[in-house]
Length: 145
Image 1 (cartoon, rainbow, N blue to C red):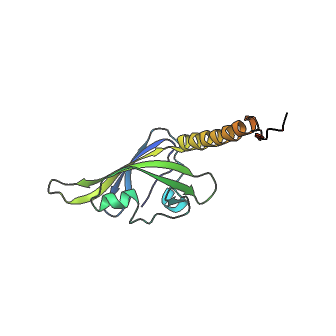
Image 2 (image 1 turned 90 degrees about the vertical axis):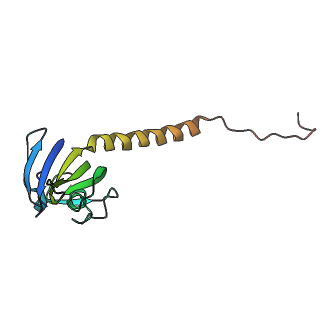
């Protein structure tokens, strides 16, 4: 499937053969054809998505996909992008599927913010543990003064 590199939000229409013939991005700056330049991954950033299990592949088979998070890695230079994908099949008046439409939203900034917040919270918890007063051993011996 062909994807153009997007910067914020991209809307793509795919024909039955998987070619993206219509796309629109909220910001200019397409940097090439992502079909050859990108790899699509599950959120673990390790397991690659097959065309069959991708949101657009599933939409081509009639499934509606809402808000699925994927990681799009650039194979040649540049950082990857976290995307939230919603996809639907494109049907004719008889219900036959002729393609799919998908909206890709760049959620990289939100993912980074969540990681930073988690790091700060962990750091704050460690700091509060260090600031706690040391517990003194209580000597219940009647001989202690």
